[in-house]
Amino acid sequence: MTAEIPSFTLNDGTKMPSIGLGCWMGTPGGGERVYNMCLSAIKAGYRHFDTAAGYGNEVQVGNAIRDSGIPRNEIYLTTKLGNLDHGRVKEAFEESLKNLNTEYIDMYLMHWPQARKPNGEQAGGYAVFRPNESPTFVETWKDMEKLLDGGKVKSIGVSNFSIKNLEILLPHCTVNPATNQVELHPCLPQNDLKAYCESKRIILTAYSPLGQPASPDQPVSLFNNDIVKKLASKLNVDVAQVLISWGAQRKTVVIPKTENKQRMTSNITLVKLSPEDMKILDDLHLQPGMHCTLCFNAKVDSGRLNGWTLEELGFPEHLYRTKS
Image 1 (cartoon, rainbow, N blue to C red):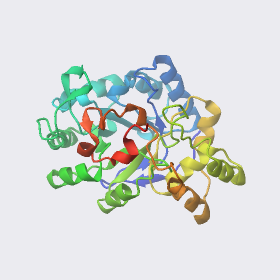
Image 2: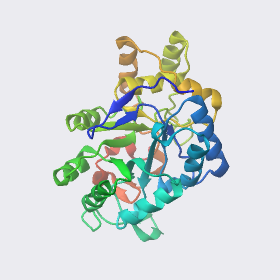
Image 3: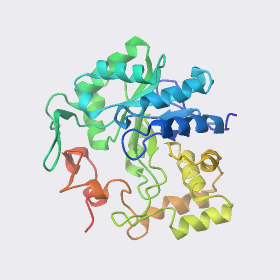
């Protein structure tokens, strides 16, 4: 079974399915769960899978793809460079290729702009190199560009890059990133970043496109939002379909994660949203308290995320700083 999923043409001429399955399980690993999830997704019609070295499950994702019996050239496979590996890009890529046990990788992303130091965590956050310390993300990107010469990766891109850091990176690129993977959903539509990337022919990929479950740390929930629920009820579909369809209709790649077989099917069953429906979702972030990250509020300590300040990352502090 192959689902009717549109593809987007990237700036290097390759095509990327607009809907994929995110393989981050909330914590590194996942083992048999990841294998079964990917195998079920392939049976449901998915042909795009997004993992990372840091997810700790490349082996299981690769096993599921091979065991599915689907030809490799019908699968789009993304993985990512870990923060510890900025100074050893070639070696890290070869390790991912070996873990996935595949002939090539379709998309290889720099997972975060900051390079983590090998001595691990320190009090107050990750031990990372500062933006001007080697290896800088510009140096890391130049090493990623060299991977294209080997024929084992088709496209390269970035993740968690702001306009600020793209403006630092792009003047040094021989090959521009094909995609920038960021948190993106109606509470964080990334309008400015989307417009900037489109001007550079960089497509956005949306992680956490459904937001996160409501919690004491993050009380905002798209699934519990009356405006979104009302729209889904009007269209006679579930909330996830509305959110995913909104993302794809904005010409962004969307990679929701689910282990539920029924939701796998509904998530790749896109609905046509009218201009009025799109505006409802476009404007959701304008509601009081709704314009915010749904991923990182509880993880931002003293204005830092993964060791860099929000200013260094180029992330708006009022959207990411822990709310008291």
